[in-house]
Image (tube, rainbow, N blue to C red; front, side, top):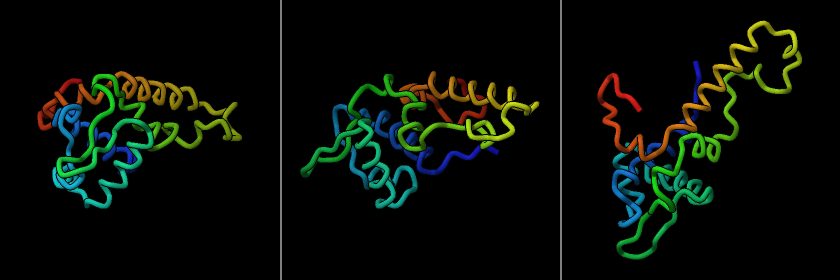
Length: 142
């Protein structure tokens, strides 16, 4: 099983939430994001701070303050977000450069190709695309 952390998954969801709210024109409060995503406000704020540090969002203070996307959702890829929050995606630990059995492993090409395809999928998927997808449809297409 491939497990991305909740940090990476919720960071993507938060950006999709901001894209759906058209946050480039009107800020969205952390409280509203947390409620929409079923997160605690503290956890949503932690992720928003990381997203801000990575340059995906900016904050606006004041009575009508909140968070806004720094660029179009169509320009932000899932790969960028995951790289910023998770680091380099490695499908299986043995695919890493440090594996001592790397050269003689008969399954290495499979793991390398699977990882390449997954990275390609993430790089080709934008937050804007996800914001337009009706995810409750069982066989939705990106």
